[in-house]
Length: 238
Image (cartoon, rainbow, N blue to C red; front, side, top):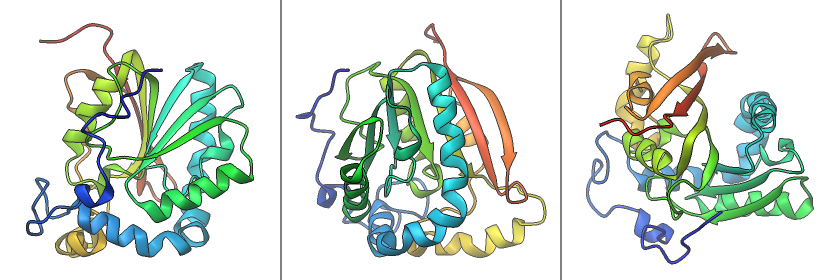
């Protein structure tokens, strides 16, 4: 796997934080500053709250999909506290990135305690990945697309580092869950404070011309989250 550790796209967390207003570095009301600040505060409690009751339910399943694919090089964007890392098979090479130092610190402690996969962790921005083109066979994103200012920018980077015919696996909340529209609208104005977009149309991740979608499946609870499987075309579309 080729990496570009000196690539200028890999910046410090301070560089990732915008200095402009609430919409400074993305098309929506969320900023990297909000995301980093929120998860810096949540890091001590994440595993015992959201991680315990929601996240771990899906990590094992997607790790099994990764293993079955036979992909040797896996990139996990938004690795967080590393809850998924214990589920990857021993022969898997996993690079996990996150832009929140406190979350990444917990992930490093988890790796130090022992995981079977070969894991490398980096502080990096999913919208500016510090890797060479076509470096990975699978890119995994757990609960990431709603906490990035620009889902389109992440997808562009995913396509760039993904090998032809490589897979994208994501679990995320997308707007349009029956009966929950009023909740999504209620939280939408708070996106900058929460570091989370409550209204993200799934079309924003299904519309990339170099990615074809293979599966969209509603997950527990009540379809609030969806599993999305995409595959990069083996030929260039123009």
